[in-house]
Amino acid sequence: MLYNTTLIIAGFATMAAPFCNELVFTHMLYAGFFGFFSGGYVGLTSIVIVDLVGVDKLSDAFGVLLLFQGVAVAIGTPICGAMRDAFEKLPRPYLWPYLIFGGAIVLSGAILFAVPYLQRRKERRQQPTKHQLDMGVLKYSTQDLSAPEQQQQL
Image 1 (tube, rainbow, N blue to C red):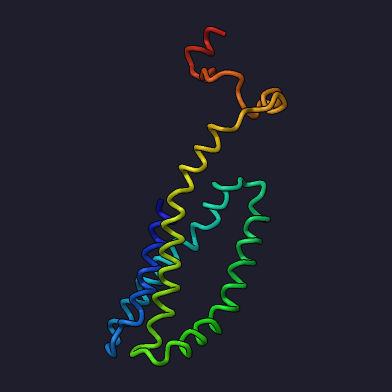
Image 2 (image 1 turned 90 degrees about the vertical axis):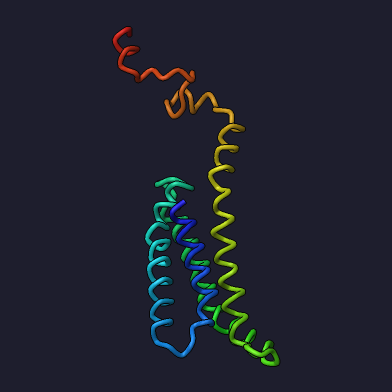
């Protein structure tokens, strides 16, 4: 929830960036909001990846994530320039890239709120295999055998 919230706030800050006027204070305020909240989701990225794919696949998943982020950074600036050129007949051509890409950040944060629901749904649908049960990865029963009163009875 914290990751998603910081991502959404950073997206809204990006959307607000072109509305900073000539006052330095407004630019400082934008930089503070964007820096604080983007730092929040960058710092939580590895924790969220471990939660999604597990610690054994962390390095692979993090590598794929950095690949996609690198491609986005490499093509983002030329796309923004092309958008500004395409929108030059509009009153504020620099406004649209900020709104579109900030909106994409907000949308991605909103979509991530569905991940816990989808994970619970997947867990309910999965049936454990005999191998998982034999290896102790999953339990044979739903009864919690680790409770103290049950251990004394054993």
